[in-house]
Length: 86
Image (cartoon, rainbow, N blue to C red; front, side):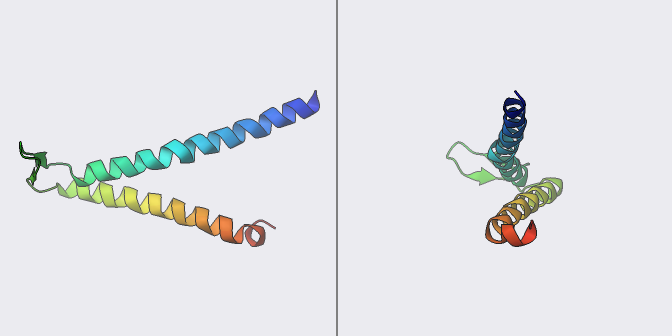
C-alpha cells in the first residue's frame, strides 16, 4: 500500500507541473500578446488602427520576459540537469 501512496504522491506532482507549464506558459504568452495590442482596434478591412497603451506595452513586455526566462530555465535544466542537481 505504501508503494501506491508514493506513486500517487509523485504522480500528482508531475501532473501539477505539467498543467502549470503546459497550459500556464501559453496562457501567459497569450496575455502578453493581448496586452501589447491593448488600445488598438481592428477596422472592417482587418487592419489595426490606434496606438497601444503604455501600460499595456509594459505589462506585455514584462510577461514576455517572464515566459522567456522560464523557457530558458527549462533549456538550462535539460542541458545541465545532472551538474545542477547532483
